[in-house]
Image 1: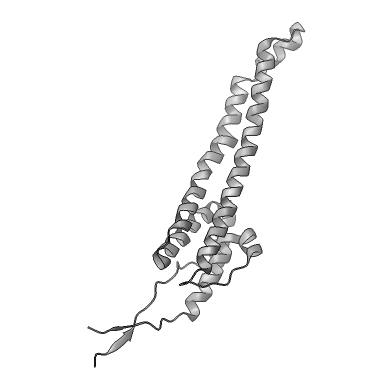
Image 2: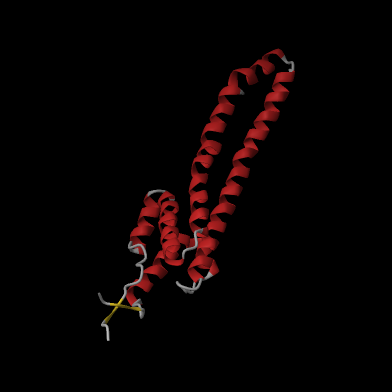
Length: 177
């Protein structure tokens, strides 16, 4: 009869949740987006499903889009439609077609960051709940709550995964060679 030994299961990413929380505070939540990718990669290795990884990569790709929407576009609007043209109409007393056109463009450019921020928030929430669904699925079976997922996302997931490390032992056996 062959001898058997316990096969260790795939260990979740190792980072204490308080360290993760501190890194989130010091990096203005940027590290949380990166850590979601690390957690989603572990979920893909553990379950074989890559839906959470795809969503977390899309979530991370929204950061440069937000930078462009909040940084570059308002600066371009101020430079292109900026101060010298606005003050010329007050001196002459005439309203030109260009000033009407520039105010319309400025209003459109003003609403663009708001729409982009709304889309980014929706993607971030969807990513958190896709991760929650994957963590609740068959091989992992974590009991996650929606409110904690919504407010604390990667820190909450790391806290639950850390508890899993402490109590997890695999009962799968394989022949010793």
